[in-house]
Image (cartoon, rainbow, N blue to C red):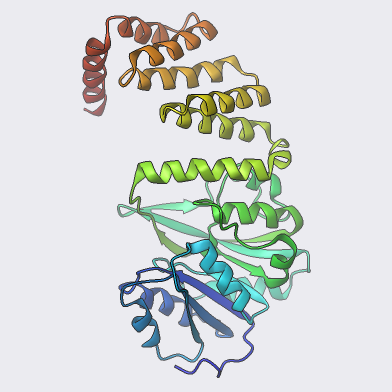
Length: 345
């Protein structure tokens, strides 16, 4: 594989990879078979200990470059290494288990050809596939998909890394991926990009992205930690959308309380209420925490149910669950298990 032949491509495509010897060729082929050919493909091996390197070296295409990191540093760091090494004026990202449709880059670059310098990124719709079910993204709640979409982006993540092409100069202004984030790195980068640049959107699913949850609990905890850091970095921006900010604070608070991180959880619940002082919403979160904690610690769970009932004294659900909790943990757990089975059936 000659690494020096292809000297100045217009687009650099970066694939971070870790122990993906079984899938890297397929992902690389979806890039190399694009109808747009003015590219280089940089595969950044994030310290794999399988046959990933051999599989990449076996690809007979002079547009492929292979960079190996000595130790595993995570996908954001690998993407940053690839971005720094890139020769192109535009940067695109692919993941080792995703598939680009053949005309993806061609359609994105055609938009850049006629776009002003204010346009920093072009992204496409995509399919997320889980258990053979396809979900079209952007979601239906996304109303503004083009132009200055910063306010829309703050509502939630709908632009995945492999769907986007970014002008290289944008990274010089906003920085690259935040390597401290255990998850949501793509969303946080888009938050920064959308603050300064316009986006263009192709309403066509040109990417297929499989979704697998290796560990739901671990992923949830990592997401919450990432969300806390993102809010701390962009708090003033999120204040422009108090509904979203309140929702995120409540989400963090509920998760931490359920993880027995009561002090931090209460702090975020207060923040959520201060941003949007809605007693109904706060009561609902107290009810959720109390109902679930009663199965582990009846005293703490009952405390949250009492808080919920004080905010909504006429809510029959809260009153009923609180009453059952007074019968003791054994009765409560039996009722909870019966309800779970009944609800599942």
